[in-house]
Length: 258
Image (tube, rainbow, N blue to C red; front, side, top):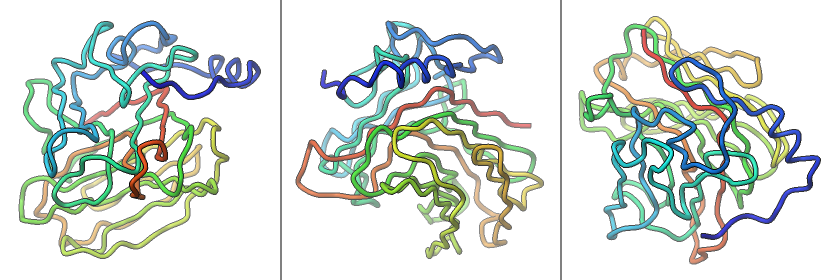
């Protein structure tokens, strides 16, 4: 398995000192010697990887991700230096039919194994602590994606991290397409940061980046659709390179619904 180059000891110490993973409501130090499923509650996620057949990327079900001996490979693994759940998406890889970009990304599921597909009503929240280890151009690290209710395959929102350190939220204008970009922060490559993407009252997206919250109205054209969360490394650039891409390390990842 290919690993990124070793970090300076001072950087590693800082990361480990800040490292907590929420699982089942309890904060525990991550174990760098186990698979991601040993540190994170992956019972509510399935994994899509940038390999497989053209137009049909490989999907790893939740049942294979869970536990200390759960699934990991060169695209999804525990960093043995700091315990981070790490996603690698090269610029060249298998993509879905509706995208030209490869991804190593989790898709929200229900605990019974069915695909998550929740109504905008109520409260829904995705919390993450992460750092972008490397990125050639732009990477999406969190989404609310449209589920059932119509024919659109668009995301409602996408949270991007750009190579220069800018964090940008993309809100979809309508299920037919069109995205409005909102600058929401700046963090240097390799630095740890946090975000919360939440829906409140069925009408508003609440985004928090490093403690600063902004609010965005949900267009009424999205109301018929149900939704689900995604998180990981959804690379936003493509080429013939399998060595360039986006590597994203997560130190915390939880979802909640109320």
